[in-house]
Image (cartoon, rainbow, N blue to C red; front, top):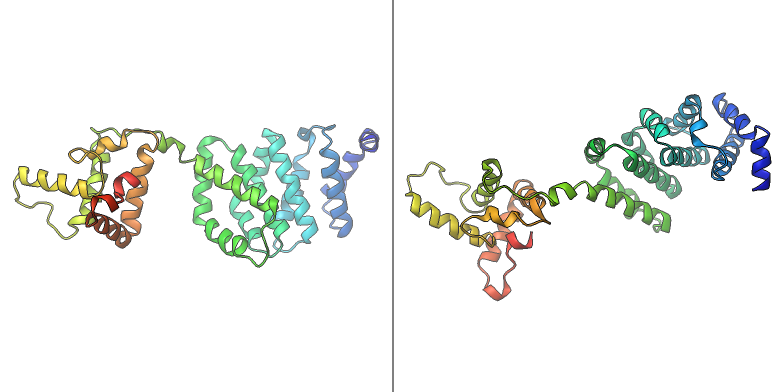
Length: 291
């Protein structure tokens, strides 16, 4: 700490930042320079807000390059993560230079240290992003097949997952699950026709995908048929299943998940519903209630 204080008092950090800002890639010496800078900043003597835009752009350029020395890339990712976590103003500047989509490429390498720092930076950007921006980030990650990349290149990789990597994956999972909380705590409005239509769609997909919705069946007969079908779907309220979604949690999140299964994995959805409808009561696992 004494050395760090003296070094900083003699403008040491300023000199290190100038070396980086010059843009000269002096190989191993650059890696040592970045390491020294990060360790000195971690002492908390100097505010992160003193970092220049030129320095941020240079560090970001190392992350955005397709070929860069692994040690330089690793330290650059770590520096950007610290910037984001320690300063809201720096978060905005880093977010302008780095996108989560660009970071995904660093998850497809064999170096688990780089993978770990890349996920840590994604987490930091996620954490510091305004609430309305987080869902947008999540959508981008989904479009870029983040889950598949993590599964294939990290979880099923040829190296055991280290403690820090496991922690960062856990943090990422928590951050993405937290986006679902609003839907989980939203009650269904039984009078909302658009929401009721989703329940009608669940029944239609399971029981009469081929039937004519304009059938001339009497109203009473259709009501009885719907009540029977809603019971088979596993709802508690057979007459008005919308009431099942007024409890929070799970609120509207349960209905979202049911509709996703019915639309995207239709065969699986129909099989689950029909299998449960033919079981004895003591062996049943009602789809509606279990969702």
